[in-house]
Length: 340
Image (cartoon, rainbow, N blue to C red; front, top):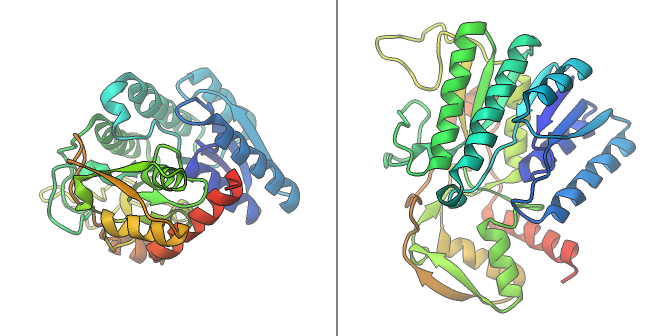
């Protein structure tokens, strides 16, 4: 397949592009390589993708550009004959959306519109795109199910990702574009983002600095290892979305449609308390953390817990990497990458 992976210099995009190259797909990567976090990490990922393409003999092209530039997006689709799209580019981060909402409009709304338009006019077979567990917002019924409404996001980042789901549905309905939205649950692992808790905690513990522990460590997260996320992403991309023949407009299912549209959770289905997550980091490092206990942050939800039944039924896969194993792999990568 000729697959466009947007955000391929990013955490999940890098891992996804690498896996596709390893199985022999032709990959076109598209990323602005912006300065939201340490660009050297992104450049190192890009170098590995080039090396992977050389080692596997797979075709790989990288475009350094901004998805908010419609002309650049159209040129990419026209030049490369894109068959499928895996859209993992986004302005990430919950708290940054409180400081710079316009960045989220550009990256998550305008850029996604450009992707939808390009998929429409170039007859792309399937658009698979990243959403987030944050769309569940004020919901407290656990585990979170795609079949329940998710209409009360608690921060602007989540609102833009929920908008992506609605935008995708409109294109599925109007133009028959098959779309699959994937709600990721707290992704972690090697090459993870420096702004995420695992990276910051590991760095601070090694440097003997205190770590900020929000909600006194009492909230839970459905931590999902990056390899499990990638497996779910690629299997979902391979399995083209179809209309749900049983969809009932009198009792509309939010996760499916009479158009070729669907939403899946990708989560470990095993929530872990933040305090236990920190203990796993301490165990992997062989060091104890100094903790700065703080209240729950604005925009954060107390708990997340994924119902992954629909993903498993559709593509035959369920994330299952234990937190202790995943954290150890991250710590090993961190020590190797930074030489500590």
